[in-house]
Image (cartoon, rainbow, N blue to C red; front, side):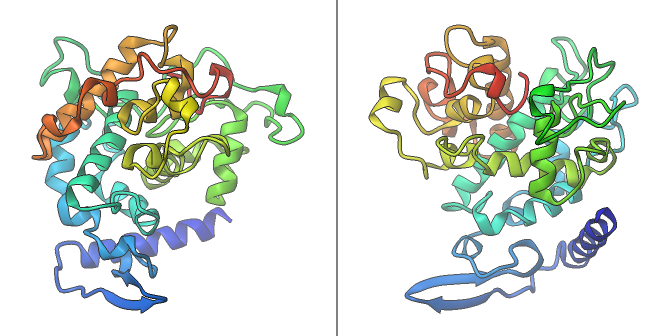
Length: 317
């Protein structure tokens, strides 16, 4: 199964290499039941209304990725040589027909990519206050937790996602995955055996990005929005959401992904502020400008009631 997945992945990477920088690719456009649908080839390959919009490589290119993560390949970075633009854009291609980075116009797409990567940069950073280039330049420094203190095996899930003897389910990836049940669920979605082989995430950057984008695009629970829907405005808050001060924006993406580990009165405000800082910094570097990030109530989840208790959040903060 892994071999087949890697073969498909290799074919996509080859297409990226062939097409990257070639602006001659013309979209296929069809009108079905009054709706305009497009197929743009390797990067947005299916008839989708989202593929009629600009794709990520139209507005976010390799040099911008390098600007955002300028220190990731420094000798002191723990994952030097692992992460790259092609791995990100190859993984993103699988989700652009579903609206990742392609919902709305160019500005909305750029903001979503900045928001997603803001989470990624914050969660994989080894930056600190006096680090060379500043603390926000060190995203993608890690691809796994260093010196984990436990195996992250929850026996409650022994019948659905049983732990493999001797295997550690510590944090790995762009949005680090923790616990056997999260590896099991992610592996099922991606058709990769992550329950028995969680190390695949730290061995393949495209798979690591794919797992992170899948989490971004997928609700943690059925009754919750995905982080994607919460950010781009597909999610419509209920009266209870309004009373809980949950509104579409970056703040609610943190609520979706981390619950009360980050949000609300008991949340880790430093972690929340770090994600916000990365997002605004990336908006600046991408040429959007941090003023497009919106007011504090959209950026923060400090006053929001959490969707989920800590035990059911997707990842530790």
